[in-house]
Image (tube, rainbow over all chains, first blue to last red; front, side):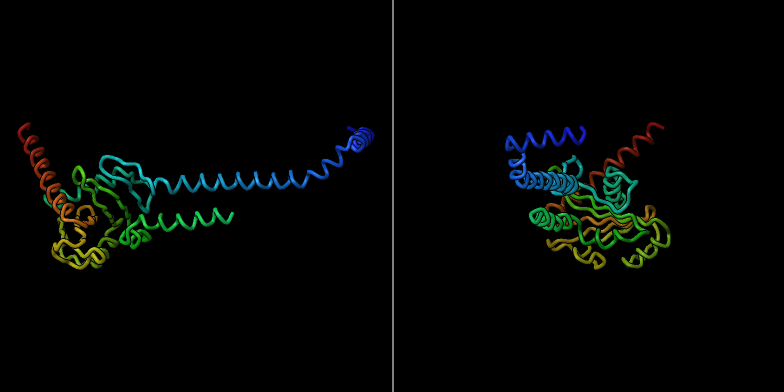
Amino acid sequence: MNNQDFDRLWKEAEASGMAHRLAQEYPAWARRRVHIRNGVVAMMCIGALSATTLPVLLPQHHDDYIAVCCNRTGISDAQWVDLAADMLITEMI
Amino acid sequence: MKKIVTIILLILPLMAAAQSHLYERYASRQELDVAQVSGFRLADSVRVDVVLIVAKNESAWQQLMKEFKVQSTEGSTSWLGDANNPVKRIGWTGKPVCKVIVSHDRRTVAFYRLDTQAQYEALLDYQLNAFDSHKHTKTKKRNNK
């Protein structure tokens, strides 16, 4: 689109009242856009928060334990549970 | 946005509450591997929380033994400790206690939180059953040879 095309379209828009309507409605549209953006950000925050907190607050139930937390990576939950069981036998042997 | 911040502030303490003071006390120490097993099953309807501390090296282990006032240097040892201060040896009175088991071979200290009589009895039963099954397996292996 060149300048002449734009001028022609703008004049048509002014003549039809479209330019005036756009200028009037733009603030409302901008507000709506901000609301949508806030909504998306809120959903992302809630999603991230749920992913980290739900396993703690609503832990999955395993047969032998409910949840394991540890200060190091590299040792699996099952290994810690085995150790907890082994330590009870260790005392008896 | 204020609502989101409020939700985060409300949930954070709940997350922190999931970890015991014992775990929190030792988890920050680099020379120790620390874990909390929540709801370790002793019997069908009896579960306990367990904190395990594993020393990564001999010096860390010696330091830990000093902190828990353990005199022995080999095998294993155990006692009932105060729930808030497991170093303090106490007897079973029906109040919350910690069963502490120390294994020198594994360089591990385990704390089993016992709040009720049912948990205390279930732990003893678990140990007896596990010991019986361990003995049975050993005998079977010997007979097969």
